[in-house]
Amino acid sequence: MPAFAMLLTSLSGIGISSVQAQDVPQLEAQFSCNLVRQEDGDGERLNFADQAVIGLTGTQIKTFQWESSVFRSTHGHECSVDTSDEPQAELTGNGWRISLRDSAAARKRRGYDFDRGLNCSIRLERDGEELHLKPSCPALCGSRLNFSALTVNLKTGLCRYDE
Image (cartoon, rainbow, N blue to C red; front, side, top):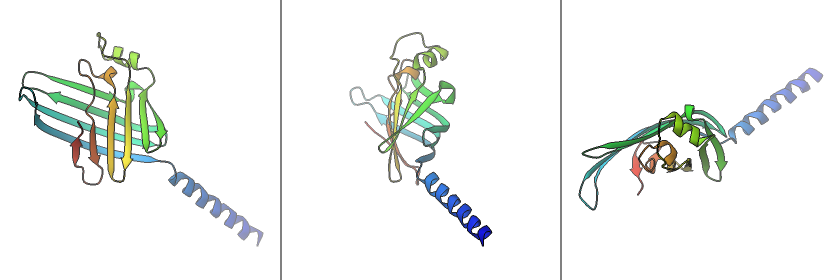
């Protein structure tokens, strides 16, 4: 009987661990989005293109890569961030805030020699099946002001660019 009691204790310990592991917020997302729209003032055509692979478990970043581009008829600009930029995750009330360990060093590694800002914060907010990406990260965007703000439906893959 004592062996049976010990087995029960071990099994209930496993059950408790599983429940605790499920409480850790996780995000597995992979998407590719694009949108073509006319610029209001001059009617210039803009093509937005974004693709990302994101894997988060609590504050641990397993994978993080996001490329965001805006193309005009005469030129284009892009932003990108990946694990080589040393992103860090912090949990918020409804998702994550991603920042860089040293955004100035990440900007310098990319060869940007003019000041666009050294801040980098990307909010990832879950609302059911929707993931809202709210960037404020000019440090990694060269001459572009920021990544595109967008919402992705994680179930259907449909994207909506936020203005």
